[in-house]
Image (cartoon, rainbow, N blue to C red; front, side):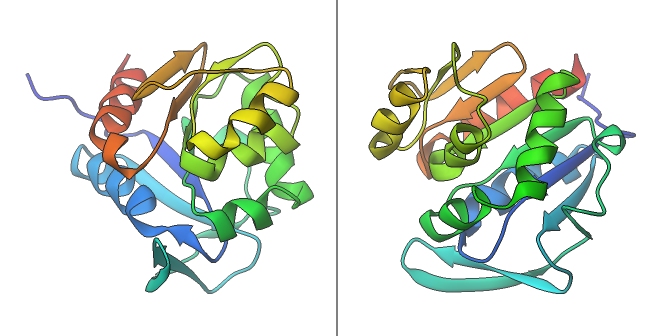
Length: 179
């Protein structure tokens, strides 16, 4: 039997400079199974992806962080990208969404540098997660346990290291949403 995510809603939280494949990989996989996926950002209009260090495509923003309601979503996905992750971590409305998700046990799936938002929101203390290796010190200093694994699940938190991990990341996110 094929997994169906019909009726599930997922929010991808990004600002300009996100790693494009870390948005499109999960987004495409979720939509193929019937989930509705919204792109949330700090302002309306378009957000610009990147292919590592080269500009990528623009994507339409569904809602702003401020207008979004965590109760409308079955999961949050936090793509990485250095520019995106460094910007989003200091936006109070983005922090508020991940904190509300954590408090309400809404799954949060984070990849690569996306973990910076969790660090800045105080959500890694006592948690085991993975990320891009350069975040190891940030996670450890914030009270988390960093491990070098393809995909890690700790409660409702799903994390992966890099674009190469997207297949395992998507599989775990889909399993979580389908459960």
